[in-house]
Image 1 (cartoon, rainbow, N blue to C red):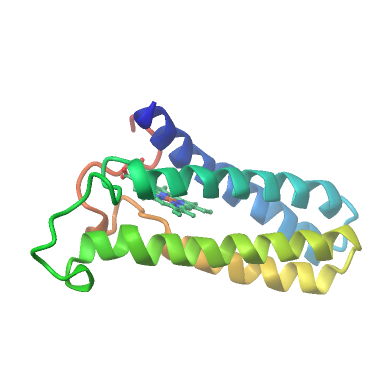
Image 2 (cartoon, helix red, strand yellow):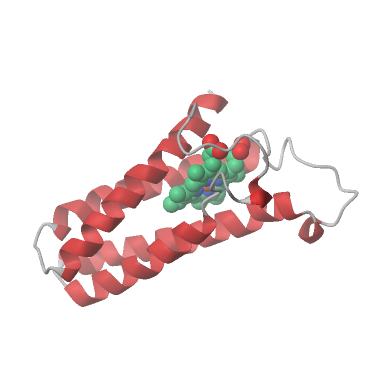
Length: 145
Ligand code: HEM
């Protein structure tokens, strides 16, 4: 189950990025479709949050299975990334996506676009992209690739 959840967490990143871009550009173009696309974005982001919390607690690098206590957490760049930087930035991004959904519902295009723009920057900065050294070996663009 753990590998399946990690794969789902990995695939959902593309779903979220796609929905986020679609909703962002629709808000800039003042399209009423932001009502529905922002809802799908909200649902995917909240599912991601639940899976993320599970990984953070019980995943292969989670708090229950994690590192020893010999090195201070903030000096361990790998665990600092996965236990603090990634979850915290993603949490803020998901809160912004949630507020943006409220704004999209009443067709407040400007607020929706700004909130989603900031969420996009946060997500792009916090994803463990394969080219980032801190994320360790074996991170993929897509599970199995
Ligand atoms: C929009 C939100 C998020 C995105 C786009 C995202 C994206 C990703 C990606 C792409 C990976 C690497 C998966 C792999 O190597 O196969 C990952 C790993 C991880 N994520 Fe997230 N994530 C998000 C939210 C969260 C949240 C909210 C948490 C925790 C509360 C979290 C906790 C983790 C953990 C602990 C890992 C490492 C899992 C492992 O390697 O075993 N993520 N995330």
